Image (cartoon, rainbow, N blue to C red; front, top):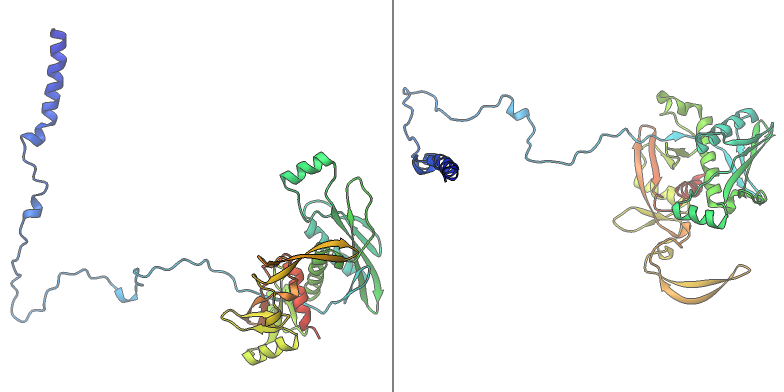
Length: 357
């Protein structure tokens, strides 16, 4: 009994001690709410300045107000375009020909550097001679996990693209012929074809065309010379997109005239848009189009009509593109936004070629 009484008395004493503050001692923590404010006035001599109880901040007018908060925008360097030299380009039945204003050695060096940058780590050239460069196969569409698993089951490797570059002298210039072929591991390669038959190969050729034009324009390598004028109207940015040099401080009427001369139409509306076709011929979401079934020999059979849900089936010259005029130190530039298409470099090239006389 004594062993049970002693712990009970200890617990009771502890509870009594802890509750004693609120039971036996008055809580004055809220007394300040019942106090009356002091209303005594400060007695000052007659003629004294009025006293104000306020916080004085030095140079308060020069401090920006923090009441209006704005989203922080990361400062960016000005958008710079680089001039290009005129590199002739022509589409043939079995190749695309570039007329490079440089000798064969310099042209081969530019192509070799381009392939190395395109391929990344490793050897990008499989064969090289005095007049020909052949690249290793490129995989422009890496397989995902399911596609890789299916290739492993079927033992059908993916198709890759290889390029061939042939160099020949032409009146102090170099005629560069570009071809491609499809290669498959363990299979027979196709014949050499023109890059116009494959959008991936065509886009690489366009990228090479821009790289040659920029590298041969030596002044583009110096920041102090970026303001120099170029007679070739097509300029290029660091992403490989093309811009049109319109001139210095041109007016809206001049822009409309240049677009009209290039065969481009301005689409009425709030957003500045242009198109290679008139507004009534532009492909739009919701249009009624035919659903055709290929039957061979290049022919198709119409099954029924459907509403267009997207523009994936629309040709590049049936679409509209946003555009913007950039004012740079070197002049005014027309930039056409082609980021919505599958091959932006290729479409940017096709639109820019309309401004070349």
